[in-house]
Amino acid sequence: MDTQTATLAEPAAAAIPRVLATDAALALIATLEAEHGALLFHQSGGCCDGSSPMCYAVGDYIVGDRDVRMGEIGGAPFFMSPSQFEYWQHTQLIIDVVPGRGGMFSLENGRDQRFLTRSRLFADDELDRLAPLAYGVAD
Image (cartoon, rainbow, N blue to C red; front, side, top):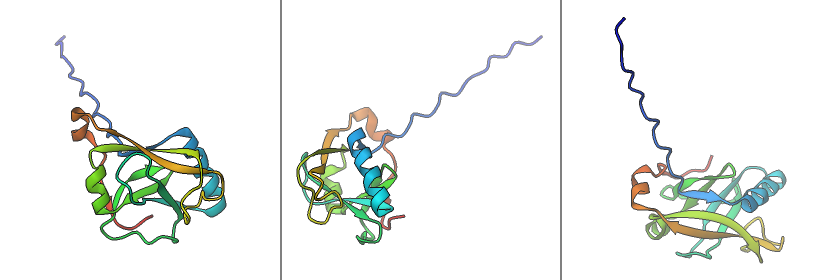
């Protein structure tokens, strides 16, 4: 009987998401989606921790053709402008919820809590495994 050595392929390393959401953010997203239907996020201004992502019902915000789709949180696509992406491209965005007032047009406004962007720099070994980007239109 011939003995063969099977070479098992190592599983491909999972893509590293560019944007994540905390459990608190996911819970608020689910609440807002139940009230407003499909949602999308757009990072509004700001280039650092503490910036506020804006949450909209799909159709209430026109995503630009060049806006960068960073990924999804709670099933909602997350976008930012190309100029914002220049600031954030080396960081993973972590969307959280904190006490306070949401942005004037963001759907969480009036709930005494708001979405907040936190971030961390990607490690060098993560840069080659980042999730792919997309551009333009929301689902």
